[in-house]
Length: 327
Image (cartoon, rainbow, N blue to C red):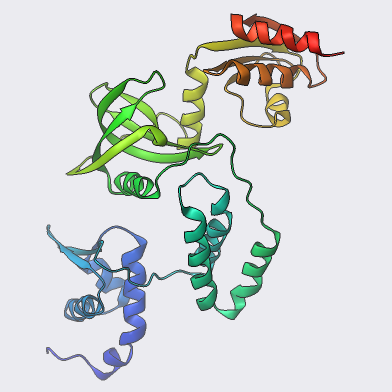
């Protein structure tokens, strides 16, 4: 029979909200999965999809063995369905966005937070008030700011496994065109990095987002490769440690590697290798001689025996001048 039963029509508003929440929770659903989750027939599901489309939700039908549906971008921004924890997480992100490295995000964050606050259920307002009253964002120094539109393009390409083409300027100032399989976006100390597999070089690469221009997602998709690390942050940290830059220093420290890491004010530009339970070797490397000098000074101030084993010429010169200025 083609008509919906009275109970099915009565449950329709709540069912539409559940359907919308499911469509927003992952990229694509088969029709059979959605019908099973909502406990309705395929015919009722198709009617509900049409109702969402009439409300300006851009639900696209997909082809394949069973067929399915996905929520795509449209001309307008329809309402989003957020649970309690997601709403608080979004609010926290908006509160702290002023301290980030994304261009123009401060005013937009304030406007978005005001809209979110107006519609939050009363049970969540005390948590939001606590966040707003006790959270302060300090902007990261020396972090180049990036375009939020570019970040959105890179993030969606990572999520949807779309091949990505862009122009890139490396640290030596050389420009190149890149065609990559984007894997993950990572932010560390105020800078954004794209981790991607570069088929042309048959290897993984990291790209600083502030050096990327003209990013263009392709229609073609790829099957994501396993990242050669436990997680994206670990991979990025390893890559930094393995990189070789113009200025360097190597120190032997009579402290365990974990102790040195925990006592430094920020992530060291290099790697810290354990050398027994109560000793480690610190390899520092960066394009900035000043930065390497600062970390050498910080490590020698850790109240532990420390030996400077090797140092590049300019860093050594800076350290000698620093020692001469100290009483």
